[in-house]
Image (cartoon, rainbow, N blue to C red; front, top):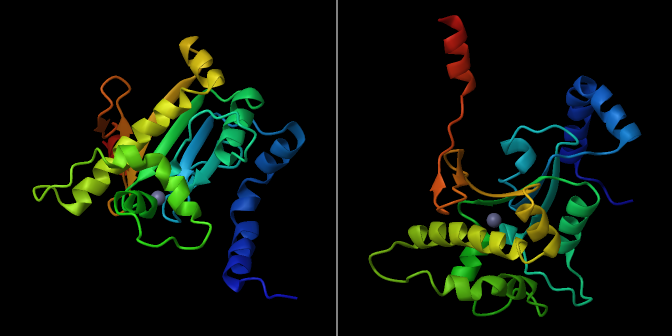
Length: 225
Ligand SMILES: [Zn+2]
């Protein structure tokens, strides 16, 4: 039998002796009554941008779909395999989630590949090239001038891509109809890995701004004063 990674088994042991004990009742309730997550989160596969960690969510709170560069494809009922569209369909039609968040992040390798495509595909299938091709026309609109650094171009495309994915979300009839009725909300977010900063998209202007959040230290300081 192939040896299972020891680091994962150790992590599981820690989980069972720690967090699972704390949340045992919650897991049991979720098993008996089913999941009722409040938010569909569309995030990148990047190991540094796990939504459950960033938003400190427990089991049953987020319905998460992760793909390379957190892209939402346009509505294409063409009989092909569409993993993200399938997750979206299930979240909206079955789970009745009422908030959708497209969360991008800094230093995204997928976005970097869209800005500077590789000369050769990584494999004959060129799955990443095809997938990131969805962003090609958007990437072409990011100026490539001496006055803009590579990091600035990348951040710009990471954020523009979120707006692009939100526009694609609205090509799905179920999303468009529910949003127009006011019973669903669509959001954009961008997480800066190095500083731990969360930026959220202003739904009117499309700009990314820092949300007002109360840090635990501030709460504690307030309680002590
Ligand atoms: Zn990424």
